[in-house]
Length: 330
Image (cartoon, rainbow, N blue to C red; front, side):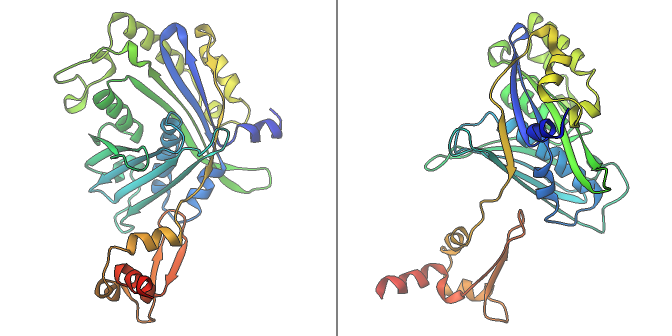
């Protein structure tokens, strides 16, 4: 693969479908997106790995949402890593890139040399879908389970959506020929089509009684699902993160017997929606007294965006609903 071809597949999501098996999926490659997310903070290595995994899943799941919608994945836990939050902003128009942002909250004194997932502890994994103005966001929650964040996402889809789902992910630092290091990540997500997943009730065979693929598939669907999973089991890390295998070549290598059908590529970029206007709107519910409690010794109200690191310094006299009322009187 040439450098131009490698760059063409960086920061993209390629949707595909295996019609013979009633399976759909996506292939993702992230490069600049992860660098954009991680350079905003000085995260310990285990936290960086967790964010990389969440960002991959966010890109893979988010590709299915409609224009102008927003998908959020969140982990809330009681371990050294207290929270991981990622957002996927769908394009406002066809052909535009989607945007991803992410950050984590953690106790640096409690981070250990244990595997990244062990830094989370007990808690829950949430999927939140915001369909836009005048709609109530949908939220689905599943307990932290398994040995990876992708296990939690698979459990969510089995439990809340009754859709057998599988992730194959790889991520890490890559060293270029000139010695520069940067993050690369890639992955594949496969999922049974909704019509192939009969409704299941009662407890499941998974961890803590959660549903698993075998609980929500009929005999034909289970045979198709197992066959496609066996093919996906052959994927190698270097195939997922490149740069020697393009996304389309990877699909042909893995699923040529299933005759994969591909759709338009979705580009993704690192991006944040924070702004001074949004900050002012969020503070508009507070009184002048409340704003006073937020004011620093220097006489300003300051705020930092956890996602992109942007710093805002505002005049307290211009904030809150009382300041707005004075402006209206004038």
